[in-house]
Image (cartoon, rainbow over all chains, first blue to last red; front, side):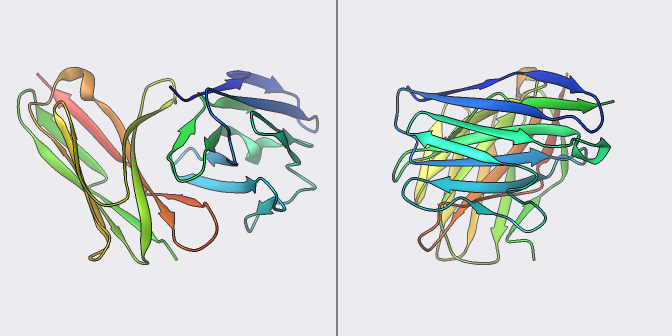
Length: 114
Length: 110
């Protein structure tokens, strides 16, 4: 079956520092990877969508300068939160999808900023 | 604006009863997924539909792309069904953007 491993599960970083999270797709080729943040109100915000052979597309309010993403092959993606501040707290989730199929999500990375 | 409107936002069910969650779409979607989010935050895949109806145990989901809605029916609810349920829809066009609904917090009570 399709699995997505996301790590770390939880991380604490000091205000102004950066942290990186990673996702590994197992059992399928992740032609698309989407990174989301779930707010305290539980809504999901799409940060960016990366599709093989296309440029990474960031949503409004999110930039590559703040959330650089790498999707170097069909099984791996990473995202960094640069200069994290309190408003960056939340649960970050990566979802990976193969062509014409559903998204499978990792278990999320919970970011706390102190 | 919001493309996926999910209702209800919260639902309480007695064990053994059932109900339905619904998502309305303001634009044409080409597929829908339903997830259950557990207490640790993980999203568990329940259904993926490009059309029609699928059933899995006590859950059944329908996606009507023409009328722009999807439903998730739960029957014979059990305590372990408690959690937050989300629908998410894939927009049409060349992108693979998945837009989430606002979620339904389900509480199953004895």
